[in-house]
Image (tube, rainbow, N blue to C red; front, side):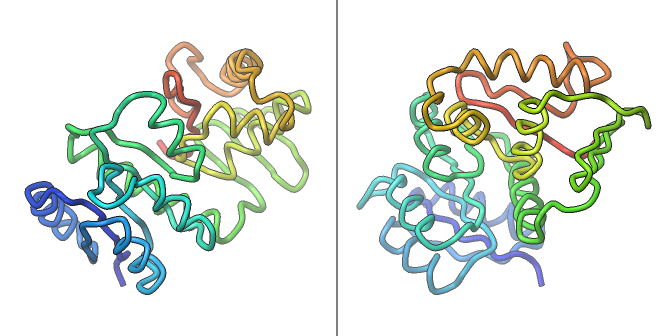
Length: 229
């Protein structure tokens, strides 16, 4: 059965456009127009993904993220006209998986939806054994990393950072989230740590570090690891 997407969007024109695009891809769709209804539908229908506008008429969409995350890890992709960095960071820090600003390209949005659904499947089963992307092979049990079949040495913090990114493939992780999980809650203001370690990981894992294919920067927000070509 195709994934069920809960779409919380109050603009009827955007709903019609998204309905046509999503149903053409074979997705099942449940629509709502308010934050309160989104919370009810998320609990009762248990969708495979939520597509959420932040500017809902009754409550801020951030309240929906908070409410859903109290009991569910369902992927949440934000689709909103509020495209400032602070809005993206707030949504992602609360547990959203991705953020697409309006106006948007439908091809990009569909790709983000597919990535969020794949991430959910990987997270549900738990990333175990060996993960491969491009020339990179990570043996999560033995903590061995290879590039083009050659073992690559990572420092403990480099490996820990890679491990966190692998746990959420395709998901944008904010600076605060990464710093908290790798260095601890007392270091969440040290964004320069990430710039240094991400650059080191790119040099060790990417064939062209200046033109990364897997480890992407979301300017002003955080980083994303894409594990497919």
